[in-house]
Image 1 (cartoon, rainbow, N blue to C red):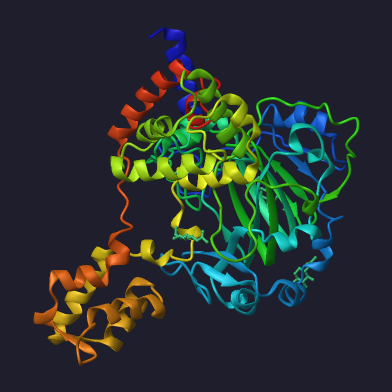
Image 2 (image 1 turned 60 degrees about the vertical axis):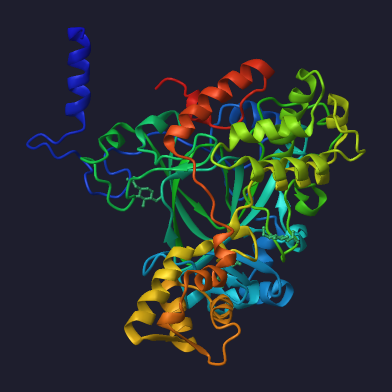
Length: 524
Ligand SMILES: *[C@@H]1O[C@H](CO)[C@@H](O)[C@H](O)[C@H]1NC(C)=O
Ligand SMILES: *[C@@H]1O[C@H](CO)[C@@H](O)[C@H](O)[C@H]1NC(C)=O
Ligand SMILES: *[C@@H]1O[C@H](CO)[C@@H](O)[C@H](O)[C@H]1NC(C)=O
């Protein structure tokens, strides 16, 4: 190594270590203790025009605080507990838990991780449950979209609208999200720590298949172990506070850790596409002003009951543009077999039968005129409903989006182990023993526990089962709904092969790769 470089490196290492010992500055302190925050974030009191918003911020993945930008929204003044209960109480939301006491998800009146707004508001001051959910469409008219998103490519780029609500504070891990977001706070206070995407190689990111765009860091944000995670000491960061009535533009893939404080925290995030260019041709005719969200088309919206559609891909850049390129570049156009080959490439962990079923249903959704093969004009003409129906078949449904989530929440193996242990202890298994254990040891609900036990004792006279009658067949029958949902997992080895084959595919077809942004780092 060149001696000058050795010297610079030495300085860099010493710079983050205290004088008299090898314990790095900020070791075991909260995130950011290693150095003062010195990456400034712009703060604006007037909303930039969409063109300026693109040129100065979105294009460069530069965050910006929009002070007061949520205050015009009816939601800012109207959305008290009482109002939400009276007007939207029966609508459903997705719940997560603060995970302080145990790792289970909270149970609402609609099952694991699912509640009505009414029941949530009656209980959230005394529970560790918080809402992370798609915002029901009935509530869109009380949320105003900031003028900076109301023309040009932004206008049709809303992917998903999320609602976030908690009581008594809480904190997130250090992570990044796939989409751009305008995150507006309607009640409470949030402390943000943010780290630009270029520092990602230093953040000790947990392994995930490279096709995922989100990601999280392994560091404990309350107590960063700089001996275990030494690269963190080289990261520059930003620190600021968002108050009720403020919004934040959080660029795609920007790392962040958020601390919510105050009695109530209530926020809405408008997720928008990972745009690569900006077409402003409608900006001279389109009104650039605060506009109700209900005047926009959102790619994935949700009525407040049934299956949610959180976390799906962008229908334009993720779906249409990719399909278009493929239809254009393949001689016979886009066919079911093409979709099948693509699925085999992207989901190597699944067997052909499963992927063939997906390809059949997915292609049927796309092929609205039953042509058997689609050219690029056909793809251009597809509406969002059709593209959405295709993606719902193509991508795997996130179980927590569905009402049957509980079948994927606990494993069949865990439940079998518990049944056998209980039965061994007592020589038999009674309904009440089983259901009690299923709820208290595995965090399940009475409804699904009852299904298991009903199946175990099916065709018997007594409402209990003796240990000698607990055959493998009986257990498999009782847990059938769990067993059919077991999914194979992508391994790091499969992922490496996947990346190689994807590169080859991209070369052949010329499809810009929208997934896996980790490879595209700018230099530090
Ligand atoms: C914020 O929450 C507090 C406490 O629940 C409530 O009194 C207040 O009205 C809320 N403010 C807004 C703007 O919703
Ligand atoms: C970060 O900002 C918060 C308030 O916005 C402040 O209380 C805290 O001391 C800041 N942390 C650092 C390390 O500057
Ligand atoms: C909801 O999701 C479940 C599980 O994926 C599926 O079986 C069911 O058909 C879906 N319901 C609707 C209405 O799409």
